[in-house]
Image 1 (cartoon, rainbow, N blue to C red):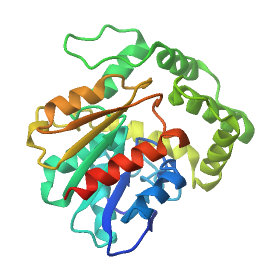
Image 2: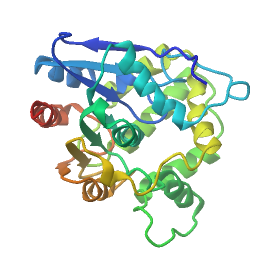
Image 3: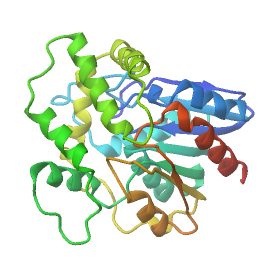
Image 4: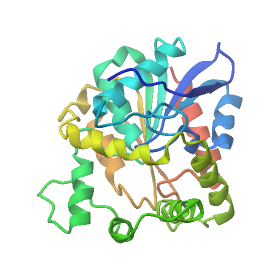
Length: 293
């Protein structure tokens, strides 16, 4: 199912080297912070961010009538590149966006100048199943990826059992609580800034509930991720993880081990979000990585 409009925007000169920012599951493109994007564009990069289908200002669908899988979400990466006239680009990806970036790097290596994955999991590692088993209290098979932190499991178990929010204020309060959890404990949490961000996310969404379609897409094709293919990644790869990662702790080292020549970078204090305190360090690393080719 391909007929979904994808919202995107770009920054910087068209003649600069292109960076495509790919955000995680159920997440709008504006979760790539404006200041961080500005640092990349000021460093001489043409930066593009976009809202996944069923998030933000991109099109939403009736999933029962028009089902899709994560293959379609992955193929939207190519659509955005094509719409911006890009034969290839540097891919900078966060969380589940990193799975998309890894998949694209294997499937269409000629379209990937370099790959950067932040707070992600190795393609083919079954990260979604690991999280679900943790939430259900089920044992993990030998060789599984590391489980999320206990506070992550406790939060989402509570969320699953809670009634839906009654109004806009309650929904935004819940979104702030989730951001606080994902932020981790390594850096101060700015609740006022979090409220401004979550209000923006709420107000620009065509249908905030449509993000649940990403879960349905995962269930529609649980074996979306190819297994045992990361050795095929040819793009120079930078793998970044926060020292206080609550969702996918230790997963980045596994990615770096499986991709030939990949470099691992640990950012002190960072959790699973991109707070202002880490923008300078992240942008400098990405500008250096994308300048090498």
